[in-house]
Amino acid sequence: MKIIARLLTVTCLWLGCANWVLAAEKPAAHKTKNVIFVMTDGLRWQEVFRGVEAGLMTKENGGVADPEGLKKEYGRESEEERRAALLPFVWGVMAKQGQLYGNRGRNAEAYVTNGMNFSYPGYSETLCGFPDPRIDSNHKFPNPNRSVLEWLVGKTEFKGRVAAFGAWELFPWILNAERSGIPVNAGLTPLTTVPMTPRLALLNELKAELPHVMDEEPPDALTFHTAVEFLLARKPRVLYISLGETDEFAHQGDYTEYLRSAHRVDSYLKALWEMVQAMPEYRDATALIFSPDHGRGDAPLGWKDHGQKVPESKYIWMAFLGPDTPALGERHDIPAVTQSQIAATLAALLGEDYAGAVKEAGKPIQDVLGKRAEK
Image (cartoon, rainbow, N blue to C red; front, side, top):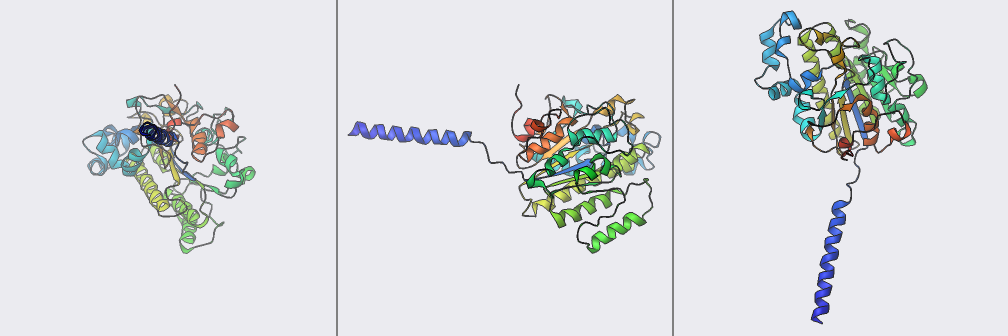
């Protein structure tokens, strides 16, 4: 009887260990139900990873009227302190709880593959998942390619739950709003598709009445807060927001306002993240993606420009934060990632296989999904 008892004890212990191992190996339940994707036009990887660049804090190279004042705002002793001063949410939250790619100084490159290095090709590659040589200008023409947003909205669970907001007036063409049916609010167009609130009415009025200092592009604040009104009213599962001041001020050679615009975008990310974490529909079930459409040239003169004649402007960066993304922080010593991978990564965070459906699209970034890429 003692032998039988011992055998039963050993068997129970073995079964308990086996169950523990199986439980440990069982993948965690997928949590991401929503994605917010924010882009800021032409923000360099240099500022994202190194902070303010000393050589541009001059009147000659950066059009800076008050170098000492700008140094007080963003100048710090170390690279880590400088970048945190410029982008406190990115480095205080996204880098600690999510993942950042694109620091060329740490062998973690991110780059565009379209060869054009300017906006329409960059937005198309980002949102469609592949470059297209037909997208070779910033002219207004309907994108012949279907974006990941259009692909998602064709699914029952996302129908009526995807929306896009852009400071640049070309977004209805980039996303082919007429074909896709995605609500796209861009440029100076008022938002009239949600219940009017005093706040939204004021935003619409400001779009019409403020001086158009950036052609047909409103200040980022109006685009951002209009998107927030839509978020509160419609609670989309996928919200895309593209902001433009970083590119506009860089082209003007105004380093002060370029930096301040980047800092404001960071504050918008913080506001969005805190907002969705306070809403039951989004709390602990939302991923945040942050990226530019292209890079820029090097200091002291090339930083103002981008395009085919500025090869350095192919280099970008990208950041991911969400419940299914491991906290690997600032990536280093890894294979390069490309802009063409963002669309499939966005879909995969939602549990959808865009790369499987669109064969020319880049593959998802596996580490962002909590899956180590195959060697």
